[in-house]
Length: 294
Image (cartoon, rainbow, N blue to C red; front, side, top):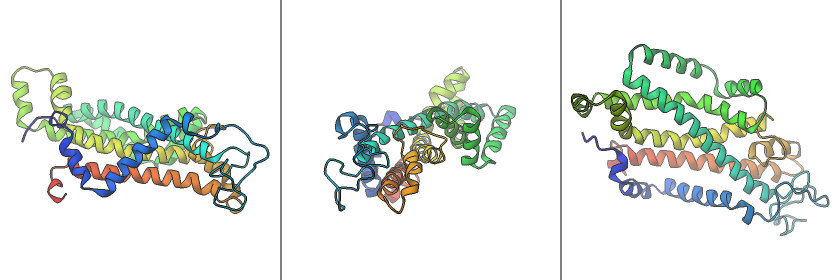
């Protein structure tokens, strides 16, 4: 089997395979659109997300009686434009997903490579730590960590990164162990290469396919878990426009102003679903065993 890393073969075959999966392709372009909206939210949003309009408490969306184009999706219980808060909330959610994946992947790469490459007692120690983390319900562990550190968006990111860590370690460890048994690794050792060179420069690039898939799925888990902490009041604090916190603030108006709960909930649902579908599509595109089915 070739030891050439996936990145050197180019992304064209992966893109061609991904285009055959309509759900993954739609999810990809939707996430590109959402990222564009999030990046340019200061210029695209019609109002400031924190500006209060005292004469427009819980104004309905434009298609309902009493709605207006000035507040296309209506206003919240304090008179803030809901569309602007949802657009800025996309910035928070995508940034949260990126930070969670970055932290989990950074630590997971180090521990996963060490466990998979060296094995022995070091592997046992790392995997016992993983077993302990996985034995606890993830959201409960995140709540405990945030309760110790204090409610804030930064601390919720740290908490969610910790509970996401075991998945990265296990996947990276398994991929490294599979690659370590191949002949090109023995050949590299035979030329006198150091452990660092073999593990980082030879083995790790060939493990990128499962890492990319897990990172994509980690985005959805990070966004969902941070939104759950925000809903419990342990994540982003007012007036930060975060979707989970918006759900929490508006749950008292679920009957009188349903759009305040429905719209942030739909945003969370669609974004998490898009990342999951894209992750499944990438798995199919990157897994040689599944390419024949595409």
